[in-house]
Length: 106
Image (cartoon, rainbow, N blue to C red):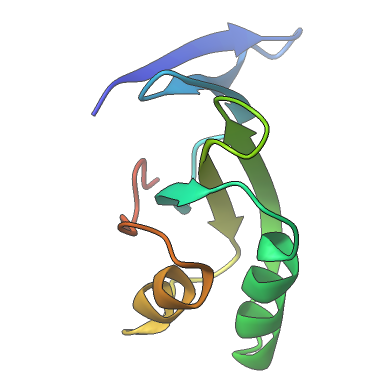
């Protein structure tokens, strides 16, 4: 795994700016990576529906892609830990290759 970061703003807050070659911008925290799915419509809605059904609040979601319709990466930050099996459910529902819990946990 390759991760790039920076400090930004007056308060010098940490931000992720690159994960495995995908450009992004996200605050580290309870971040979960759902890498390598094929970019297509409806993926964000599926993720939101699964998490909403579990009463899990999304603090941030960044979808990064290499090209339109190409490979994509979702970096998802939530307010609480994901219960066992939820990341696997998301990964299966959107047809991702793999999900990775807590890519940069607090």
